[in-house]
Image (cartoon, rainbow, N blue to C red):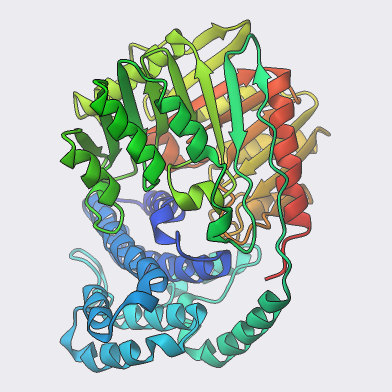
Length: 532
């Protein structure tokens, strides 16, 4: 039996799964992603309200709701990106994958006929409206009968009104068609006048005794294929090419041809290649082409964590060096999104990552299944103190809080998703105590009731929504300009208790300076975003 408080907690964790799932918005701008996420969160809120406090097995029921939503939202995202190359028949077939009810067949064919006449914004609005009509009735155990939950329930009205900068529910999108058309016309005019904004190529500093190299993406807007060169993909490819014995890869998403080819070449040269990914990505025909290519070359790819995300992004080469960070191995992550990657030479650190990799690849232990043990959490690498933790087994949020509590001068952060109240409370307390606190939130999702952004703005803290029209994907804290917290770990309950994640806390002023320079670039773009 779930109490109202427990349902609220479950709703937040379910919402975090939608907010942190890049597959839902890889083809979308921030504005479009917000439209789709608002719709998804509205459906989620309505379904959970329908469950009621007496529902048995609420967690399992909510997991099913999230899976359904993810499937629909991923399908909408891909349709927005693919529709130009689809025939009428292909468009109808793809729409029917999203919309099963036969009574909507006329609407499906009508939308397929109009697909080339609609802007991306208009298509997205039509798709969410159609999906609302087809969305399933409340699940077994709910207290309401079948209905279309296109609006958040009345119970949540006060919470939505109290949430800073809350927006209209997605169910009202159908009534905003004319307004969206006008906005799109303005958008088109602005884009035609736009001069591209080029972010300076970040430096690649080496810290300590040559043990570490850090890299940052340099996204440009508008995004052009011709600019897709010289990125982190080339750095990672060069790293994989150094392999003489083995390469272990734990990656959420992978679609980069040069990285894939490097793995295939290493295999041909006799290296042992092992890959772990997220089971939903591995089973998604729109996401798994590269993994299928690896499997065709007899490289075993293990998928895991069906109820959360296998969210790691690390590579271990020859058990002597590792690559990790916020960066997924995709073209969008490389050339559209703000990301970081770090290469560290250390057999001790590589052993930590290998131990956790073995638990996923060999033992098939993901998320809460995996037990702690076998890793050394505090290391000395080239005279630098490095803390290394894995979620969920290491209670990573507690380690972040402990580091932030030591701050006596400043805290800077860049956050793709920041919904953990305990971490947010420490940051707000430090700002109240007079420390210099500055932060940049990814725009999409920051205005929801779950985000720490609204609470920090209410306290008049120096926090901004990012200016990258796509994603600001960093998950970074810089403490006292000497310590950096980085990795795959979003600042959320889901990351702490459900996902597979890794985190580094590195005490090195040179590395901190490199991340401060990146912070200033991201902050400046947030203050003066490119015109769209």
